[in-house]
Length: 557
Image 1 (cartoon, one colour):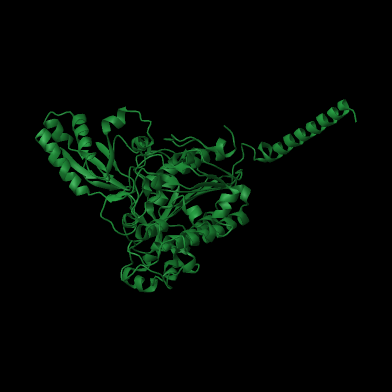
Image 2 (spheres, rainbow, N blue to C red):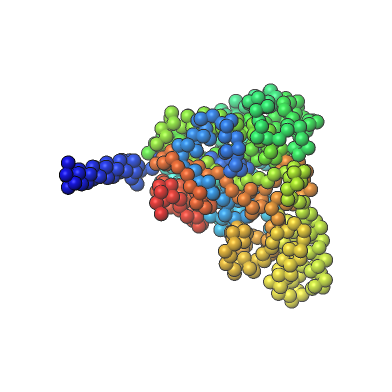
């Protein structure tokens, strides 16, 4: 064959290969995806309270193929997703995911906070103007009234002229109410009367399907047998010894070890103790099935939304800490329940007709005593000593005590006293910040004046600023060194810090038009709501500040 002939053949082969590649790319890319005007039948938001990102891979070898592994392998995972504000608590976490913004805008600055006008305190969803629906307790005196932005549940309902349904479910009231927003329906657990309830803010009476669910009395079933590990305990090598000094106990229990005698502890504390075990997740999944069937979610031509928050991992994490076998067993069991749930969704709707995202509302730190015994940096910060230091120091400077309250790492000043003494508030703020950063364990402090007027490039300062709400937050916000605790707590763990162990969260998308893949690009948890909005063609929430991630999922710049 002559050179020219060979070159002609090679050129033809190259053209064929490129043509086939182009056609294959078109077949697996845009043209295979649903038309932009189509939407999934059902959106399912799964939030796991206190789930650290590393739990995905720490327990990987113990997971089955159809639960967490299925989401990771078949879905799109963001491996560098963070809460883009502080403090990292349950209330702000759920509000930020579903409003697409941060406490600076949605106003949920904690699970509770100091009220500047009255000097009292409010609970994040507390509302004395409404009443309980479903029991005789006051556990239903709740609503989203403190939230200043709509949620994606609200925008979905508004967009479809209230034809779409939005349901929030959790053991914790705040885990159900904030996602459901102002126009959805929310159901949570009454720990006193051991049943799912709601509020007169949402409805006049419980639907029949909720009453049927309550009549099953599942808590009694869950505490009828001891809590033992799902797999042989000797295989839980990712966790420390079962009998250790870093874990709390149930009332009536001598040592925090398996098996946990739930029947005996229920005799002391009531059947509600099941919420402090993995069976709280089982209960929540059962309620999710009941909601889908009872409300006929995803059964008509309008996209519906189910927001499910799993509160038990937080209860368990606080008691035992991230290194415990109890936490490991919780996630192994959750994985099995998740697999069953995903199979149910696939069988009833088809993977291509659902949009699922899984994330958390915050992470958790390791127990300080455990870290101390390992020789790792940690410490305990004393709030009352700090308040005494502030009061003495500021009194020495100004001749009067301008401190009103110190709580939740925020200083609230007495502005009446400051005005009466003709002192500039920003000067007191500045001096208070100087005193705070001299305290052992305090990493930094920012004044309200700086937070209102400044622009920060450092990620920690940015998180503090996004967690600062001008009408509700204090005069000085401060934060602790990594792995420092605002207590002398010796067992379990807590959260709330701006550091990665509390801010890094799992974020996995699955189902509707979602390709398999992953990204290490930094994204914020407040980006979830606008991403969902783009998938289901609805407006962004009223306070949205997040950026959609759809283009990252599809590999576009």
